[in-house]
Length: 486
Image 1 (cartoon, rainbow, N blue to C red):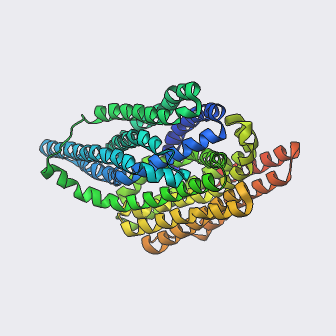
Image 2 (image 1 turned 90 degrees about the vertical axis):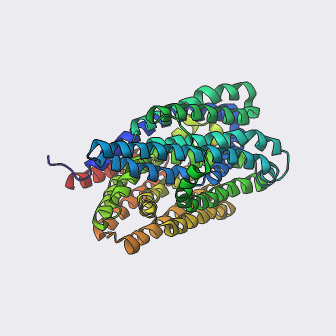
Image 3 (image 1 turned 135 degrees about the vertical axis):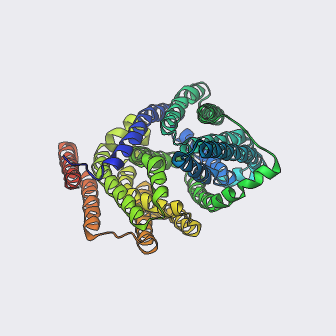
């Protein structure tokens, strides 16, 4: 058979999706143990602390985990294309300096993150818990903010240097660390071990990332002001990314704080578990976006024809893969939730089912959203992510009218809105032409998933499983037929 035009994308998606699949197996084990040891209230407490850590980390790292990749990757590509030995030596020195500059700024910003977490411990406690009783908890959380910033800096180095296998290894080891480090602490201290486990986990993750980062490029730092000023452009590029991260994490933390203050910490645990469960499985397909698709798109962004072709192929492959996969998830969730979490989490099943349907729109959204980032179009990137961060607050409307399932419906609506928005931007700003054939395929994919959800909502017993299996099989056959025609 002739070379299929989707094979390159499928190969990368399979590589990183496979690694993510192994991560998911380990995460399943970890989630099950955590759910049993901590219960819904412990999971909710962990979710709030961890989301706050992520907010502070994303705010204080000034987007270096994104802008740093671009700077290192650019010099790396020049090095690969260099001809003479003299030119290669010169570029090798530039590459080493670029990595050292990134690491230096990352270390400084990690210290800033620790200080900010300590400084705002009391306001954070009031915002998330409605009192000051957890202020010392946020003080204790501060080191984890710095550890995660250093970790992301080293991962940026590995991405920029194209050490993708090492990157996958670190990702896998981080999940293993979650088992080896956190679980014993939860077992000994229960809910009181949430904070120590977070700090210990991110310290171990930082240690492993630095180890592999040192193998890729020897650890070196430059703190002279004349050297650090060279990073101003890198910081400027990352500024809009920081604004997006702040808005996004504040929105998510706001949802958790609202549920904690007006419902219960158990509701936070249920919502967070349902959201995390669906996004974790989706990560099997989405994993290749950041590690493979974004660098490829960045390399051809100056050519309107090549960037459009790269985007459309990625959309096609993702659509083919996620439709039968998500349909199978919708059918299997009544078994997966109690199996991988606990019977106490069964109320999230309807929410996770409808949320999984909406992940199809998320799958189409992501490759389009990367377009403005690859193009360095900061204003467009900021606008897209601001809208995406704000409309997630629809979750609160959904909760008000229909509880957990209302939140699932709201997440699906949000993903649809975001998808339509970025597809419009890709068409009018970047010249991407979405043919009626592709629109039709997307509608068919959506029809399969909504049909699966509808059947699972009205049927039970053997009829549920037979109907779900049939729809999933037909969806898989349709996707395979699209692949064979390519």
